[in-house]
Length: 434
Ligand SMILES: [Zn+2]
Image (tube, rainbow, N blue to C red; front, side, top):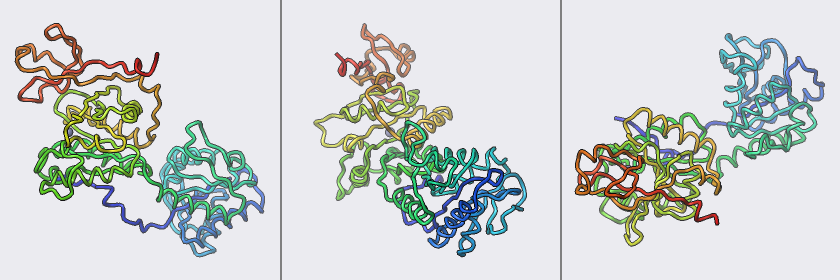
């Protein structure tokens, strides 16, 4: 049986000690004795604070990174050198652990080096250091630059690397402050409330989202999101639900005898701590990937527009009904439907979408609405409207005419009582523009 990780319940304290990287000029570029001793002091401070030093271990030249290793060792710290090529022999003799990446210097070694750090401190620095700083920036790993140490550290201190403005390269002027700042940045990262909650398998027989999230969470740092399984009991049974449909049970009732009613209350409550909630579903129909807005507020439509999904379906849950879908009862949330859920191409596409959401974040703008196809569910294509032969021509999102009425079929072939849902196009732009 498949086992799923539930990141919310596994959020216990992490016993790992912080891994602080020191990157900087290599010995084939001149640097002064004074700068070298600053690098050593940074290493010393890292060790005194009980953190692990990660450095770029060279096989020929000395470097500021290696100088930090000597400082850390002097203070009794643990030092990890990440080197290029094969073989564990490096120039710096104070390394406790050597990682041989099999990759070239300036040709890949920098990735495992930087990605193995919670934060990096940069001192001086030529093109190799610049490379490492950009890797850190793109991976969301904070960078602290020692001002006055020359090279790229001086040039970039206090700046964002691009107009995304993810984070500024932090500026410090002395080694002790560099390490205090680095540790503070790790703490802020760990305590920062996360923006996005992804829910998978709200219907227990729709595990496509759970499989995608398990993959994505292994490949990304979940700095900005949490995820959880909606209906764990139904997943175990491989059924849509155990007692009642979870996605018709919100806002739920924590005292209900029905499991899903209790679970809905938990999910709605957990959702209040996030800015955005995305509930991942799967269907047998050939819908492709589509965003479903169950509660068409401006915030929810903007969220839908910000997701890397072309088709948006507004499918309002009945306002009059006391119970409804999870996303109707969260501060800001939509569903993503993926189908056919067993198609590997659809699974890959959902993976791409979710990966992009968690790695790039969600930044809605009104302009994004223009790039979307927006539909609205307005009825159903009933069995008596057309013959089974005609019904076979119906395809999801493919414009058709039934009894003189233009419509777009949605979720074709999944229901016993009707052929599919009927969509009409919506031009939201007309609402916002004169
Ligand atoms: Zn579903």
